[in-house]
Amino acid sequence: MLAGRAADGDLRAFEVLVRRHGPLMRAYAARVLGSNSEVDDVVQETFITAWKKLPTLDDLSVVKSWLMRIVNRKAIDRIRARHDDRPLLDWDDETPPEQGPEKQAEAQSQREQLKGALDRLPEAQKQCWVMKEVGGFSYEEISEELGVPPSTVRGLLARARKTLIREMEEWR
Image (cartoon, rainbow, N blue to C red):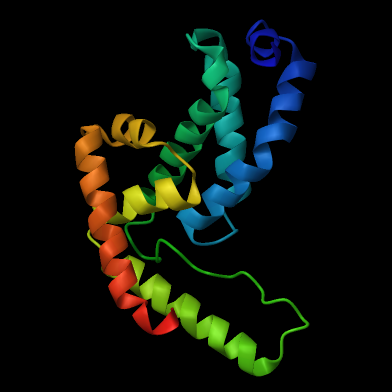
């Protein structure tokens, strides 16, 4: 098993883990951080932590979710260090060039409305939604990460989704 070899100190096996999981971790960190300026630092810090702590991981089959939890914590720590002076999400994805200016303006407006709707959610609902919908975390992983029961995670996600559906109704 690749994670087992990496846990035993095999640098090549760890490099494969970095190549395999790095892009998802980078995309997730970019969404959580709201910009690309700190993404590389957060992902690098995550892999440094993972290299040091991989031998302590009991179940090596969950290495992907374990890495995602680490990158989530590192990104949240980065946001906390900002003292909330920048928004959590900054939608900077470019619209494909084949779309005309009117489509680009419409897409930008939709992203801004979604960003605003996410910013108005209570923090716990926003964290659950981002972890589930952007990070692909399971209910159990979110529960473990936030220290709340899975039933609370389900409730927070249901309320967040209901609010977002209501706020984004005109775009359906």
